[in-house]
View 1 (tube, one colour):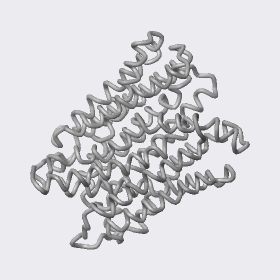
View 2 (spheres, rainbow, N blue to C red):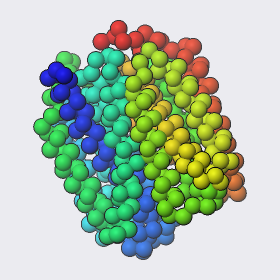
View 3 (tube, helix red, strand yellow):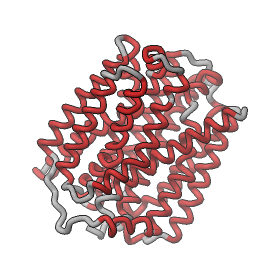
Amino acid sequence: MTRLQVSRNIVLAVFMISTFAVGMTEYVVTGLLTQFASDLNVNVSTTGLLLSVYAISVAVFGPLLRMITIKVPPKPLLISLMVTFIMSNAMAAMAPNFEILLLSRLFSAAMHAPFFGLCMSIAFTISKPEKRPSAIAAVQGGLTIAIMLGVPFGSFIGGVLDWRYVFWFIVLLGIIALIGLVLVTPNQKPAVAPKLREELRIFKNTNVLLVLAIIVFGFSGVFTAYTFIEPMLREFAGFGVSGITTGFFFFGLGAVIGNFVSGRIHPNFLTERLILALGILAAVLVLFTFLLPFSILAFVMCFLFGAGTFGTTPILNSKIILAGTEAPSLSGTIAASIFNLANSIGATLGTIFLDIGTGFTLITLIAAGMITFGMILTIITHKVEDKSLFSTAKG
């Protein structure tokens, strides 16, 4: 293994540790809502704001922060964002009331998209063309591992000790990540300083707009169903705490495997594999509630749901970054933000459907229909997109 490869692998490892910490912050609150409600004297329904506000803030404030800092070199900006992350989680750990806890989530959310975007951009530029999807998958891998291991571990800490220790643990992870970022992040300086007006031309790029449409109108269906996995496992599979925890573990395991398998796809075949992945994911959701009553199959379906969900994200991220040639500084942030927008849309739709009396089976079928629509958009994209953008001949 060459020195260049070693350096690249070390950088990607540090990025994975960093995105693990950020991913844990985003998702760990799902297992702590009851504790927040009890300790901070608010209703459980109110604590749901810790999730929805985070997702919306990533989608809105992330791109704005990146636009403001577009001329700041990547390394010092990454370090500054990680410092913000550490301080926001320390604020959460010491929050005297729910309002301060919610404010801490706003700060964490604001740094989320720029941080992921910068990590993906740097990983992209330090990799050979054929290795770029796998580099992007490595950055995303920290998030999927956080879903598989970080979230259950955080719930365990919160249950055995106190929810504040969860955030202190994340602070420790952030400090480790910060040290790694300072030591190994390449000090890249673009030959030409980024210009915001030119980078905003990405929103006129048909190839990018098609991918954004796939995420918003198709991938959002994932969270229409994912939001209610826990009650579905209770109602259809009859699981208690241990069964539900195991189900979430298998979802996370599928997410990790799906993420890294998709990262190995050759850039020339990204769109074709995306069509296949979305088709399989839609089929999984069609069958989901019908197979949950069978315990073993319930775990299999959770695994397939996770694999399908996070098997598509590296492909979509890669397509945005590869196609968004006019926005090397902004494309990764846009990719991270649009996924959180889709998450928020999907979760909101699922809640609306449930509130009007729609059953879980119909909700998963609606989610499958949305993903199928995303697959149709991908087929259209495959016919009209500029395929030279995804050729490994481009350096």
